[in-house]
Length: 514
Image (cartoon, rainbow, N blue to C red):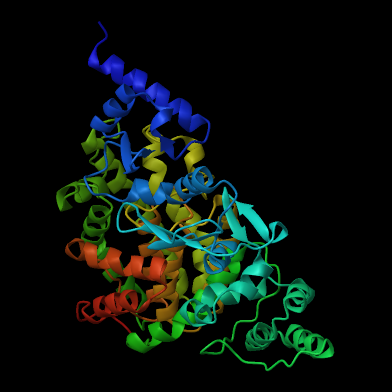
């Protein structure tokens, strides 16, 4: 008679075989009842809706959303294809957002189908699927992306509602920047006689400084006999000028996010006082903050460390050998890596205090911070040497977040753009807040993104004479909620407020100005 562990292993092999074939949305018929019940009981399977499941990890706590948010898009693609065949397409608004790389999980996914009952399907963690009866674009105007049927970019721009320009200006602007020539939308505008939409698109392109496309749309429609009245659908102007067809839509989104958010950061932060008058005193205060910073930063990431362990690690009184599953060993290795990275960050701050451009310093040094952070784990055999190579080479999901970071291919475009923005920015507070936020938003590494983001923030704070800021463990929930509001909701104000309050509450005596 097979042991319970052998039976579970058999069920796991069956689940693994499905996953090897790319199956994310698991139908009840894909597994026997015995396998389903065994996997569900042991935390490897979760029912999404009746008869449909996704794989989960036993280590997830009850109510945790990570597995669902990671599975959301492929699950919806499989479920809709099974339910509707090819008689469906995401809304033009959702299509636009996906075209420009915004894969944030929506609270409600709006889907069009010619045969539908305007039915809402409840999904886990407050998400839902709404399928409405509506005409679909022609087949030539439907494109597939990761199994999802979308409006093509030109068709989505024509079909999206006027309100979307106000509700989600960053995504719409990023989409408009991807249009190279007026001909991409004119054929559809002329065939449909869309004079009102043509006026809106002409106004939108002019808002972006793309007067040639705006003029071509207006003049061509008038030449065809249409009465077109140009109207700007956006509520604000943008100062960002982007070349058409950037290598990655994330480049456009990041530049637009930066421009959109910087004013809110400046309004909430105390003015920068300039580089410190006493470089050595500033660096001494950074050194003195180490134990407190390491305790809180590592604890925020889930490591169990104490000030005593941190001090032992700093003095070299630690043992990298032992069982690789030993939690104490992992904590000690993380603490040692943090100490080594902290020293590298301190040298980066020294460069900034001597007048080097802070964006250039971060660009050149951030890989050193990362390598030092994980070098002890490589030396102990917990990580492969290849893990120090740099940016991730696969997908990553943020625990509990509705924000889906860009693909690993897009990271290679997004990170240089972030450092370009840091180099170009004149306000230290903007470099600090948006630098931290966008590094976590891009999530360039498989691990260590939060720690790297806080290191980057403090290097940028130093460039304005602000003090080293420790994010307290007891305020972790507030900190993570503010980052989520920025990443998934596009609202930077709570995060800017949070960091501004920490700066204002810093210990007195920090040498802030010349």
